[in-house]
Length: 223
Length: 223
DNA sequence: AATATTTTGTGAAATGTTACACAATAAAAT
DNA sequence: ATTTTATTGTGTAACATTTCACAAAATATT
Image (cartoon, rainbow over all chains, first blue to last red):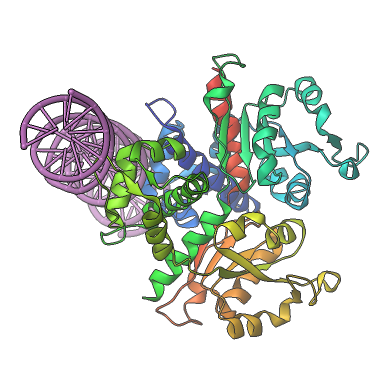
């Protein structure tokens, strides 16, 4: 993963498990536990104890036989890797229902993330004095550079998504999570404009395919 | 995948690719194209031509050398597998911002899905006369059974999610896509209550981990 | 102190997924 | 009609990920 040759898919699964470990360990800690065994942690997030041990080996987290792992030590290492000493700032472009929901998403705070601003093209949405301000799209570039924002969410209608992506990349965004109902990807048209050493990583939230997949699996389960 | 021993992860990737093929092929068709080659389709959705051909072999879609695949034939087979002759009905439980956004999510219509009702605990949200009605949670069971709904979305606060999941499974929901900022899973406590042959498949939308992963990858890219 | 038990750590095996390679085939070119 | 070219189809290889298996170690028990 980290040190070995890895791909983004492997990374993502690993990061997902790390996030799950973190959440569960925080719960265990809140219950007063100080140590955890790999089989208990594995049960909690639906992976095998071997996977837990492999993950912890990857992070150089030492365990002790019959003593398991020290929860504080695991949390410390996970936070180090994910660099979650302080909340990571992100922006949301497109402040319709999904966008504003994401601006105020409760899960961000608990997971070391912070939506710091929204941007929209609709003047009625603009609210610079809100708790999390919403600015016009024209101010995106200035804001992104001034605040050194690297990651953003796109939650605009499908037909605007590609153009918004262009603006975000131009502004300096280097990671995009796309909620628009259209597949976005980093294509060659950006390379002529941007520093060649840094592209933009785009991940799409596949809401429809997730549901289609559920329908498919539910049908199969009924057979 | 379909005929071979498969797991849900493999299925999901396959279904995701099918959805992507479908979207792209609809676009190609709108452009007047009648045939497609595996390398063009692969380019369009970022997979290798071999993957495309393997997928089509799995679906028994015949191609012809130097003639490629007939777009209509591929779409027909994909729709058959995904059973998308008519929109698949789903419900949304929790009609806050994410919930109402999902009720009206534009991507559903184009992807063969239809949100037919929302449910909420808050009386102020109830709106039985809306285009997509929102009912009180007490009516969930009746509605689900009467309309034979099998799949639903959870978009409630974290602290309500588990209880809402219970109600949904009790009502007859067999596939759940969870947007609440908490990991849900189908645990043993359901087994005593439900028909043993049919569990409930739960997938979590990992919004925070997706973003954490983006931060991680962006950081790695800058190194 | 000695023994038993339970867990970690990790090399290797197994499984899953993707890509390679090329024979076969069909359309295009001659 | 024949040859050339470009693609499909698929067996197999390569690579990625997960699991197995067990030695080693540390705690618990005797």
